[in-house]
Length: 119
Image 1 (cartoon, rainbow, N blue to C red):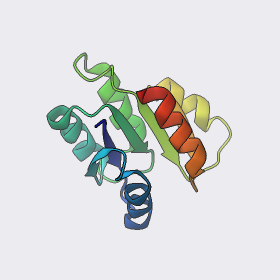
Image 2 (image 1 turned 135 degrees about the horizontal axis):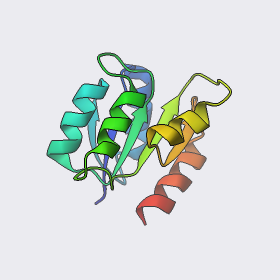
Image 3 (image 1 turned 135 degrees about the vertical axis):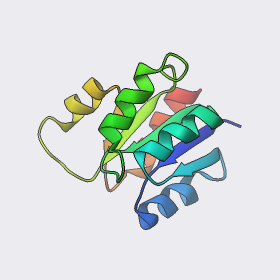
Image 4 (image 1 turned 30 degrees about the vertical axis):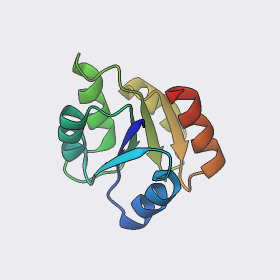
């Protein structure tokens, strides 16, 4: 079973993602960017769903650090954000995200992206 690390600080959003994914994927969670990096090092997930607005270390910085680490840079990262700002997609790609989705998450689109990346 493929493992997904969900880095999300809002309990409601985390619960939705867990309910959507728990039957098909092994899930690991973290509540901030720093913890997300630590979990990625320990758990070696197959993919990371990274909220971009996080406490302690934001998702932009955490993604840059993950992609700068030669032992982690191969892990695909999908950035998630509720802030619909012009240029956010490009900013996410520049930070190292492999893809980017706006919240609220389109469940079908997320599942399609996960299947395309993981299979």
